[in-house]
Length: 425
Ligand SMILES: [Zn+2]
Image 1: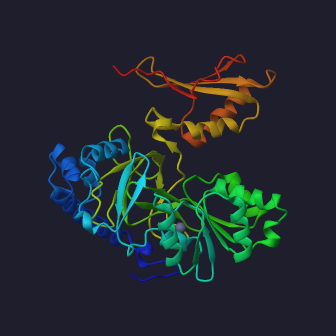
Image 2: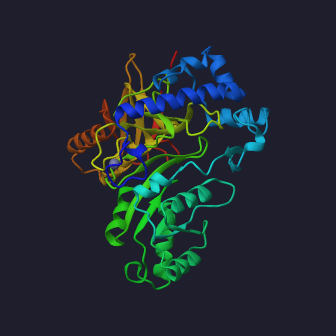
Image 3: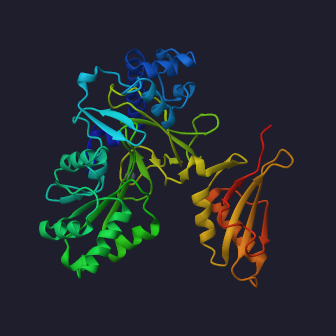
């Protein structure tokens, strides 16, 4: 595996053939090991009568059910502390993190460069001084990101969350060049610096920011990049399977899959794998170590992927934006309508004060109706309806069957924006 450009390691530029073989080989080994050593993993396969030797490729994972956070919590309650997912003797556990549930997660091996590829792709290098504003308390974020910053050669400051005034002072005193945290926390720190009378561009050395935990909105990204001259990057991380699932390169057009995981985008109803551009749930199986027998973890996040070549040279497919949560999404005529995404479409029309999307199935066919309240009753409704449908189709790939303009106040304050009235009998 030759490294052609500036990459963290050769995995990032594997050929399609190399990647397929690498992932399938790791997956098959991981499943065999988990079946033998983790009772919860064995239960998953036994329940559907699949022999571990049958899981040879990513496609074979479709034979297995999806494990949810609730299963993890329930199993850990029944079989404490690890719920049958630990596939090594407990004495070999290097560290334990705790996430809400509570879920006990033994993570092992500082040898694995969990987040380093993500930080490297974001340009963190020797000479950078980076504040890590994620918590070092209980959850894995603080320590894992800290190590990844170090793995790129940069100097990490163990700041943790909160205390924006102390963050500002530290950034000034130490000449901090990089920020690691959430977009909203960076906004708060910048606001605090301005309140304290500083000018971010003039007084600070901050050059780049790396975000996770919250999606970076295009408007906030533009503000950070244009007004403050920062280079911004984001990554998608999930705690339960232990890490960074996908990360952005300088192209800012999606997040490359991390080769330490099998990442599937699946139909939430059938669990079947979907192709490029199709919207479904992100399902993750860690294959980077044999210690945690978690197979097909359903993240509840909705996204799609693209396998178009990326100009950065990295060869892994990319997750498109995280569109929302599966409990905020309904499937209409085979396509997902995600509440958050729909809200963004409606928000683009200033003439609309309130909306509701109603899905019904009157004659064995899904019907989608937009109910719309107007700020100004005199607008050209036909023009607005056409514009709305066009925009909605470009984002959600569906058109409304009808658009009803309802009187102001017809949609109650507490009503949900996405209402599914279909009954499946
Ligand atoms: Zn790229």
